Amino acid sequence: MGDLTSSMVATGRIETHVWTSGPEDGVPLLLVHGNLVSGGWWRYVTRLLPDDVRVIAPDLRGFGRTEALPVDATLGLADMVDDVRALLVTLGLAGRGTVNAAGWSLGGGVLWKYALAYPDDLASLTMVAPLSPCGFGGTKGAGGQPCFADFAATGGGTAAPEVYQRFADGDRSEENPMTSPRVILREFFGPRANVASVDEEFLLDEVLRTRTGEDFNPGNSVPSPNWPGAAPGTRGLFNAISPKYYNATAFAGLARKPPLTWLRGGQDQVISDTSMFDLGNLGRLGAVPGWPGEDVLPPQPMDSQTRAVLDGYRAGGGVAEEIVLPDAAHGMPVEVPDLVAAAITARLVR
Image 1 (tube, rainbow, N blue to C red):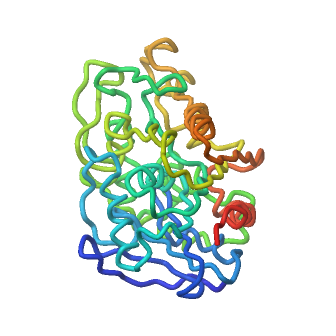
Image 2: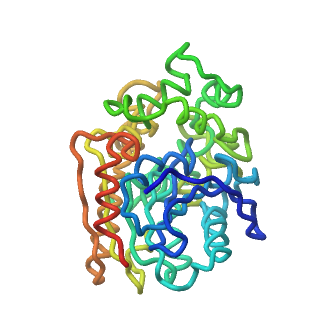
């Protein structure tokens, strides 16, 4: 596989920036990126894929070079799902059951919902550290029971405004590491020991294209009587992944079940049962004062929730494999691209 090619595609719904590689008549592979990055972050995986694969890696709305249309949080990522569907329709790939798909983090959340909305499009799924089917934050138990009726401790009010201001400013420095985009990239989303094999400046370029504000990242919030005093608003990405609006647990009951691989890292600090971005876990660690305690707001059991949905998927006749990479963290597409490429290749349906 060669490097990715950049182009704009007009779908009639949104002007989508797409990264592609491989033969146009090759085996279609849709790659959906995670939060804070772009489709270009898949470049190290795509170089290791078979030569007959046609890679299609769009930038989601609010990211990369795609038209900056706002995120309607009340749709629970359905606007992104429909953007991707419009792209596949434009490319002539919708409704044929031939599209293999891989989603990383937020991209996995998009694919849970995509499979529910358009089950006849997909041939296989590879979920790389996907968003829990119960959404992000504020739930407990494998079934995703809400901790608060208004879903406080989730959504746009949980984000640190200083971080997103530095994104908006295009800050490339390492000053004040707790809020530095470069340091956050390295510590939580990045290549770690594989840093010498990637172009960190390219990765940071793509990160700093993230749209910020109430319509994008992180979104707005409303006051709450519950800890920490904020509940989800109706705009922006963090609200769209809040369990107030996002729930894809019905995935377990899909009538048509494409075979699935779930790839997760044993040292993931973003999507795991001990996420450093989940207020339940941060409260337990003492990093955020006033935590109401384990009985009220425990750390979200993200892995357990995903496993419960996939157990249901298998019980209904589906194929779902869980692969754990004990030494990998969240940024697997840039940390261990060879292992991600191998997992995707093994799951391909030709």
